[in-house]
Length: 481
Image (cartoon, rainbow, N blue to C red; front, side):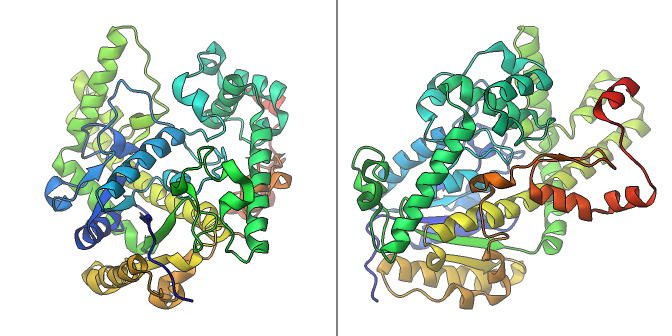
């Protein structure tokens, strides 16, 4: 069946760090009259171009980039709702100029919140986010209850009193998720687990209605003002090709196998150090000291303070500033920081892919967007034009013209397999799998069936079983400590 040109298209580019997402975004923007919207949480910060890995100006080829460097160190980190609202406004402005909005960035929960209207408050991953249900409160009035600054155990105890379901959802040491869950309750007066369930039910009802209609029913016909953001704005009505999406969207996943990506990421860290990474980390440390002198406390568990490189190089710079460390010690600290930064970068790339395969691909499938989502082979940079640019140009041209799109499975068969969801459900929707267990051999706490199964299969657990080790009960362990 012939397609109509999308009246208000959006192109999104996803993938792990180091795969070339930004390069493809610039190439597409240059060829198809586009403007780029940053979807990376760290690149929202002003300055600090090296530690946040902003694309150099000369590589942007004159293409307008939005939401880069718009947060200062004194500003509160943005919530997902804040990002989404700002990005939606910029998308509207770009379209008013007759240009194509292109979203690119590695913070995939930002991408997901923009592509799909129904984003759950899922803090399963390290995010500083809220959702539409609590956005109006969270964006304008940060909760100031002193308990949120207390010990994690105290926050968890209070959370268990008001919402035992969500309290058992998180690992007892996962301060950010515990803290955010209680913050949501204190801000809204509603249990986060109830909000999860309500939104999950709405999403299931929406998916069923779209499925029953053969995928051709508009969301506005399904749930009225919920689909229209409460304002009847036609921009938020989903298209036939993406019944569960916010827009008619074309998604490119630039993928590279992790073993191929590892040396590329290591080399990037070396280049960042050569370009002045340590000077930026030092500037952050100086800012912290200036705030301390003024009696101000900076939350270093959020925002730019959790950027890779900041924590890793802190011991080295502190030792160097003290003037007491010898040359051998400084050399050792420096090498340790470099190794830790490289390891953290590689782990970050893994987490990005995990989010895509566990969260984003399920959302894409639920929204009926699999036919407009393509994986591109970014393994061999010497073949970038053949494997990435050329197919992306052809697909984008067809998408914008309303022509028939190729079968995603035929575009890049070697990497298309990664678009298959890692599991056929979103953990946010499977409350029955929110089961906390403690291994009586290792003392390991698992908060989902998935975590438990992985632990049971782990080398550490099997080794402990062979050695006949048994973990101390929590009370005895505390006494022993």
